[in-house]
Image (cartoon, rainbow, N blue to C red):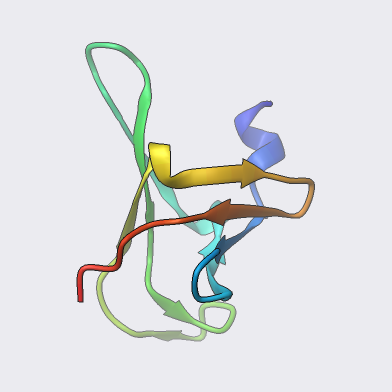
Length: 80
């Protein structure tokens, strides 16, 4: 899958059933030594980016469970 094909997919938290953002608004953290993706950084926005709520959410690459045609399903521990 190409990065351009991932853009626009919604990121959904498996445990909470919550929409965390859209991948087009996210950044990737890449390991400079291996070129592998370490994590996805998603800005914490409220509904379609109208109001910024705070800091970004970091999703480790190993927490991504499924990349589908419309969304990316993740399962991660919230550190609240």
